[in-house]
Image (cartoon, rainbow, N blue to C red):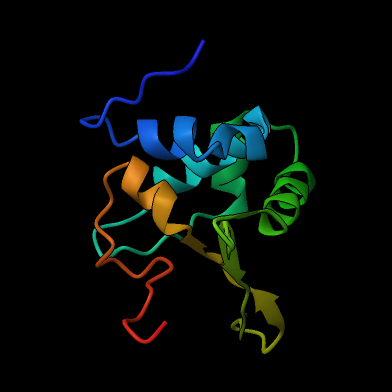
Length: 128
């Protein structure tokens, strides 16, 4: 039986016709949803690993990191589903420590959740 695509539903086209859910696992979808829920008013997504661990109900940060690394390798429509920018800064004692990761999400994920593409996540220039 062929699936009907609801043109008024932003989820239908990428999920049903384009096969997004065939490409990712339920665990990937859960992580994407948690990341989208952490996009702020400026369009930035930089939740701490501790926050993601709590939201996802995981036992440790290593489990979150493993999920992020796995999702970084996945693509949809020739673009990565997420891009992670990792950075370090010096703390008060002069020791270099990791800061919160900043995540850029695939434009289709943003469209599904009705996040405007004018935000800073995976912006595509007119030259591309």
